[in-house]
Length: 219
Image (cartoon, rainbow, N blue to C red; front, side):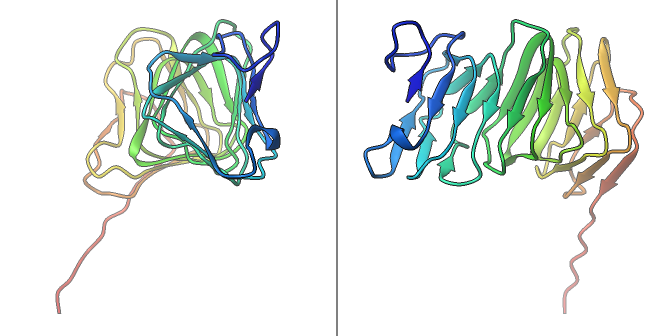
């Protein structure tokens, strides 16, 4: 790995440092980046041009203050939690190119987060919005469940024409406190793959909300 902290090297980055992984990050074989602590930080993180498989493991938390750009191949990155922070109002971009993430928190006060590709993080994980605006840019999201926090920070989503697919069998969509929530459904669809999934709408206006009912019959 490398980053642009003054003086160079690959020491532990600060929230201002951009972090890069590429084809020069390995020694000709698969490699693992272990994130086991809760307070690992960086500015931008960019993974590109990998010629070996890189695995991010350790179950820790990566706090990102900038943009995220991941490749479509040679990266496994779902074993850590991602917290998107921000110190500026400039839109931060999240581009995963099909690489699945772990659970995701958005916590940047007065911040905007724009998707640069579809976003997936699996049935066991979630997306929680504590602060800021998540702008899908018409890309799709597939996750276990979505929760817009019960705090009173300005927080919400702008969905465009996106489809939000919810995979969790018990939790699904949750807005329990609509104070300072801004929610723009536009022409979006929220699709729950489990009829048992909960849906707490927080008095917001939605476009299409679909629950899939599976009927099993015996012979």
